[in-house]
Length: 184
Ligand code: GRF
Image (cartoon, rainbow, N blue to C red; front, side, top):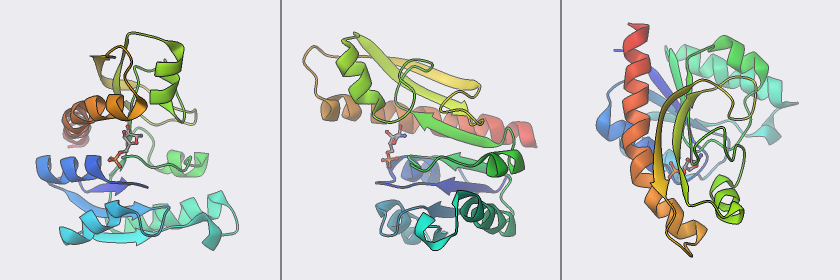
């Protein structure tokens, strides 16, 4: 089974979906001490650690430490599930075509932060979820899976997020499992 490492900054509901639906999650790292995602990992007996930018000279130094830690756990596939730090090119080169991200829009529409608010502000009637490979750009890597979600008229960002999350929890494990199968 492919060893998978998950990076998460927040609530960790996508992490929970990965743990429930897939085997092979060997470790979880966060850029934020106290992220609930770390408690989810700990609750499942999964090794977890914090790599906070403040503890390193720069982003590259942090990402080298993070990549070394993942490597020491035998990780071959990295999933960013609500990970809010941009990965450095050095990190991406080390896991080229083996980093999977979930994003709450139909990329290439609404990349970057606040994708749900961007969709609402744009007044579009449809947005969705994209699972894609991570490259050096912001949400520009190859799309693996996408699914559209209708935006109910007048929906708040919170309401729309609640509609998108079950789709994320289905699409992310599905895409990760496909990439893992390709790695053999
Ligand atoms: C998800 O909506 C994901 O699309 C975005 O950040 C959120 C993370 O949610 N990138 P969670 O921490 O997995 O609950």
